[in-house]
Image (cartoon, rainbow, N blue to C red):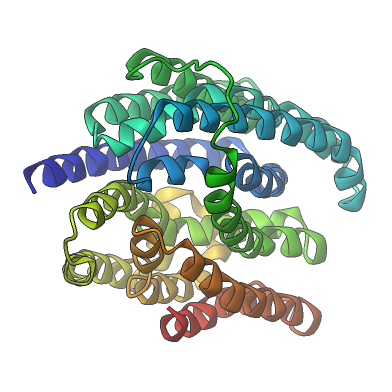
Length: 394
């Protein structure tokens, strides 16, 4: 239990430092970049996000939850990651002009192709990071995450101040991935390069296929907001939506990401030791809710002040969306760790079934919303409604 608490402390410390750095970044970049520039990058990042889910193919999650790790399984995981990443890079480069044509924005093509460089770097860190998480070595993960966040923020602000617009965020993303790869190589136990091997490919791909399909469905639904809004309302509206949702994501994505980073290997370790995951999950949700609900309540009561503090007065239009997103975040607390516990205990098939039910519903609601209402508020309410439905499904 001491190891879990120390790991959680380090993970939260890394994430809180990341949030602090992110707040400074938001504060500065919101004044250096226009909504259209941020919206352009948001659409590119949403597209990259879809490709990254396939690139990972659940291999990192497999290594963490696998009951018996062998050299062949680690080497096969590394080899498969490299092959899938390179294939993803090629597909992205070839499809980028078509995606840019769909949005009628030529600059989007080159941005996507440059961001594709991250796919060539990620294989050198993903296996090492998964093994560090499996062994609960969050001391190394703390330094890796903190350094990557700080350096990428300096790059973003520096490039934005120099007048590079959306390209400053592209440079920041590449810097983050490069620093992560270098430091993962430094801390990796047993090295970060492994001899090619495909002996265990069936075992890994059986787990990874289900995990990837579940994550792909979730990522498509998450990205659909930016993709649909960008097509129907414009890039400036994507920027407004991302700033409003960014307030919710301070906890829903950043803090909960730190908690899930520890919860997943901790749940997997408890399952291997035949401990009750139900009791551990219930206690975890209770603790999270005690912090999450006051957080969301405060920002829901003072949305304009929050937006101005974080992003500046030019984003005041986004304030009306903040209470809706905060309500969605408060609801999400009740189910956000369920899939983590299911996957960590080897029940990735149940996680997939949840996504197969909830994400098509969410996408259908988003499309209907775009067709009928064509307003930012309606997109926020769709997220809230979906999160309420997800309580029953999970």
